[in-house]
Length: 253
Image 1: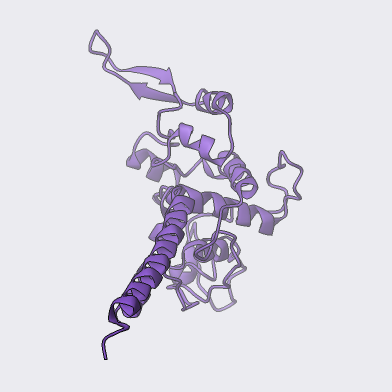
Image 2 (image 1 turned 135 degrees about the horizontal axis):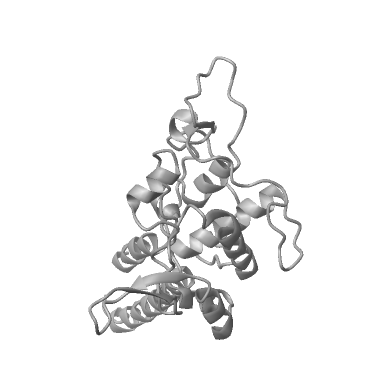
């Protein structure tokens, strides 16, 4: 029984904890059946690539993903040449050079993603005092994770008649306080997918959510694969030890 309890304890630790509650700080979340959920969950790389397209064309004007390097895009199916081309579209400040001066250069695959603003003050000035958060870890930073982000982007509604909306704010059923500074970013056909997937609002939101889940945990598949191997090893060694125990004690009365 000792081995069984030990195995159960490790099994609980290794399996990613699933939140049972469907209620977040702002409102009820409609839970989605994501392909990356569960111990055997895996990424849908087609969806992640489409989500990256949505980020580039819709989200990158306000939000950065500073914890991801351009070369990380190879992990979701982009070739080295494609990554070099994507990186070369951005410029960043580097230096100092041999003369002790800072200089601008085009980004390289080894660089982190270049953000839309030089500093926090510039970001606030461009957004009526609100600071657009970095998105690379946004799924980890919000209770509810992918479900929260999916519901938030679908949560823009007309405010109730008795609801007083502040200037420059938008009504959202999920965001805490129901007032959010970000205008609804996703509508039908706001992008034209390269793979000709119908660009409905729901599809776009699913794809950008999948992409941001990947940016927050690009090692997810490796972690789950290692967890499954460890569990298999524990099961095997437990059976072996039980067999050895029975053999050693079989003649003891």
